[in-house]
Image (cartoon, rainbow over all chains, first blue to last red; front, side):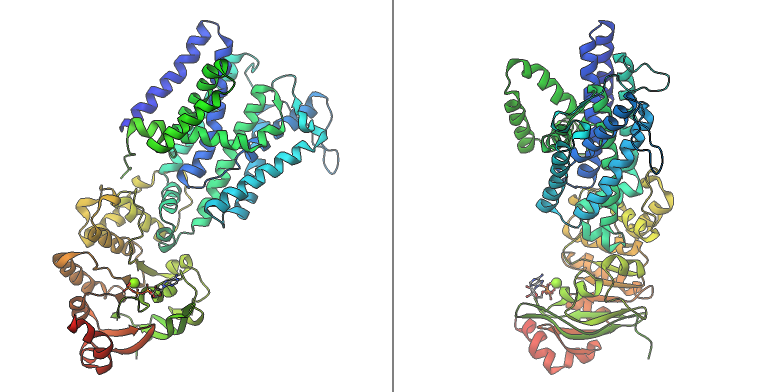
Length: 327
Length: 251
Ligand SMILES: Nc1ncnc2c1ncn2[C@@H]1O[C@H](COP(=O)(O)OP(=O)(O)OP(=O)(O)O)[C@@H](O)[C@H]1O
Ligand SMILES: [Mg+2]
């Protein structure tokens, strides 16, 4: 067991303790905040696979977050007015079922990631950042000009979607659902990091020549990582839309990409729990300082600066020290 | 005459006005160590890069295992069985020594798209990696972070990773650099035995090692091969003495 494992265990405990306390004292608002943390952390877990493992500085993950959100919005809005999405060539109806929505969200963001990845992964450095940013912004402006689903104003969904066996309108139930999904994503990304694929992907981040010389193509590794990463962030987008029962083009904007990246950097790039800590810290700051001043993001900026300058491993890196390689 | 395993035919490469390779034809035969020597900046590494597929020649071809591989990239050539070590170590510095070797074994096995099973618990891969580390004498450093290795140890790890590939031919760009007298002697002994497994195209500045090991030596000066022959032939070649060895004697 490494120090990081203990820290992660303590964080898990804390992450369960806070909502338990909020639940037993009847503070629904805190439960919603915790749900928000879990869903945003999930978006960060997605990005962390591209950024942390693959070294792919994607500044366009809002594209996947937004696609997930709009997958939810489109399916649920049609379902709530009983208006099919398409009648020809086959009948496609909307749905209020979370599992179906999640599947659609993940598949469509994975496909988008495949397309964006094929077009952007031939480049690197600042070009890659710019191309991913451009795709996100393209979708942002597209949804602004798409009146069918609210255009610039966005779209409200009146009732939260359903999950078999749960009443998702009860905050604690939706919270548990979000926690379970986050837990599964963390488990998956831990397995991924230690797998054959993870070894080759992290090697390609450190030295692409090395990977090529042993007969492995870095491009394929990065493309697969980008697709997995996009699908997870897309799932987070669908859940975030369900949390707010609202979608809008903002989900696609570069602010959103920046926020997801901030979670990862604050918590620790490439650290399993990095996005969790980052998202929790972000929401905590927003909650505590947002009430004091509308300019709370200035403090966030200072904190980010401090992390980038003095604590490159983020919060987890500072607490756990350099990652002990699994040798 | 035995069919060469690896062959370049008329390779030329210019960087602007600089001719880094000019009409280079050389071959590597089964079981031999073919040393490529030449002064700094002669174009040795540039030639290795073109053979390995990292760099496209302006003209000329590369044949490997009887196949024209000029159009293939590094990955495809590695998969065909071209093992390579770099002059400037190209290793995953955050990894342990063992992880770097496992990466090589993984590349050789070719099933990288596995997403769930912990790779460091794959006994076949780890076994193969440890065996390679043992052969170069790095077994005691398996758990060391690669960034903490000395310069010479990194060279040894480069060789170990190439070994995990079980290649059909080796390209080694200055594997002795930074090893020190003892290490260099040990590696010389090791390469001596390795040629039976696969032939080696060896770029090396350490003349003791070159003359001890090479079945044939080619001398590259200003991108051009001025002589190819046995150690004895090269030692007595007047042009080589003038262009290269003479400089060394004077230095
Ligand atoms: N990518 C490049 N662009 C421009 N010039 C280059 C490039 N690569 C190498 N050169 C030049 O080509 C010449 C040959 O370089 P190369 O590295 O092949 O020499 P070398 O024989 O390996 O030297 P050394 O013994 O120092 O390793 C040098 O003058 C070098 O500066
Ligand atoms: Mg060189």
